[in-house]
Length: 341
Ligand code: Q9C
Ligand code: ZN
Image 1 (cartoon, rainbow, N blue to C red):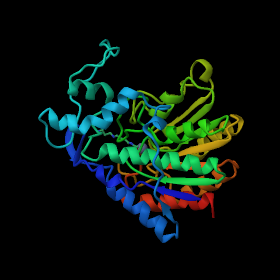
Image 2: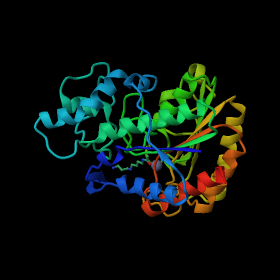
Image 3: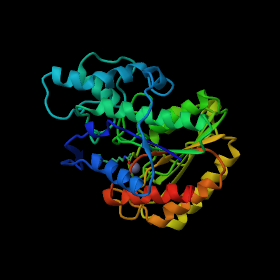
Image 4: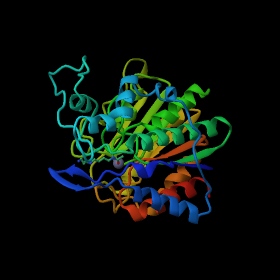
């Protein structure tokens, strides 16, 4: 297994987010990265820097105007007289127009954002951009014959859509890896999302496509973030109908139910014709996660890894959420070790 670690992650370090109307310290911190890094190093894993890919490599997943916005957002935020982390303040709500992108910076920020929990800071673009390089490097290593790779990065990616950021995510690393695998020759690819939160961005990106199968096990969006996507009746559209599988479970669901959903997802992936798998490995389904409500134990992550190995596909694991900082490293390591004992 090869390990690609994001060298620019620490530059994304906003001070606070809005949570239930209050300013609270960010849950998604550089510390998360360090605990995973430490666990991997203690286990003897060798972490590599990513290769540098051109911005064009992102265009199979994100729109050009969105990338342009993200790249320049921090400078524009400062140039329009602001200081501190950048937050959106206005959105195109239902009934308003999305067919024109306003010139005003705040209006553009709200156009591309979908929550107030995802501040943009000085080093956000560089961090997200080199995380994308890690995901692309992992895909490249699988295309070269490696059987597995792990992408150690933050900010996470699975909530980021074609041109939206939110849920702590800016660029969709898992989608970028899946798209790179497709472009590199895999005729079909599957993405399995085991983060507690539905991977709305990944779903949106591939929703009308038959060539990338998306399966997600997550907290029921009726009560859990991201609320507006992730229901079981979302099965894909057009040529992609049947290539999207959502397995929402109620908050508090026991591990046994989670593993039944996993079996369903794995069976669907096995039947999808996928030649490679990308795993959105959020470990916030762990029992002690501070913002999530599933009940997996650390040994359950080892079982997940074992189960994935039995699929027999090359796998790119991409770090997503997980906010019980000390345990993130142990849970990630348990999964990777289960996969490759
Ligand atoms: N102020 C991931 O696990 N929580 N994202 C709501 C809004 C957002 C989680 C807070 C949770 C996002 C990658
Ligand atoms: Zn999550």
